[in-house]
Length: 131
Image 1 (cartoon, rainbow, N blue to C red):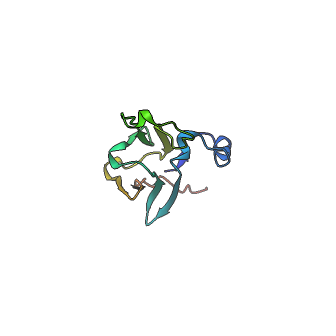
Image 2 (cartoon, one colour):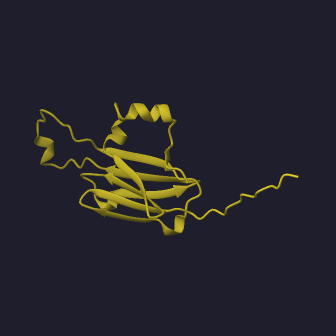
Image 3 (cartoon, rainbow, N blue to C red):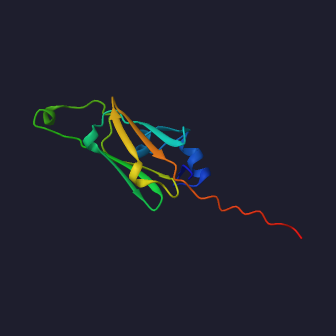
């Protein structure tokens, strides 16, 4: 099981310098501990209900939506600067053959934590005797 971003390695290298708007709000740390993969993603300003986690063909996809709720009070505002972004955000990671039934996720104080157990793969190695 590999935690490889959907993009090619060289493309991903440039994201560290110039992240896309959609990925700028979804920075994460990925590590391995006690036989599991762990993903910790900062998602400030999101609520648990804004986040969707899906698996498909070996990919783990995290989606989040933040709506710009303009109400009557806001319509009278004359913004000088607006830096907060709204819309849909998405990150995908290739995990290979993953154990979909045992993935756990929690969300607390703007941090999404996902634990992905490694799927047991049978050892198909066979030693061949040389005559």
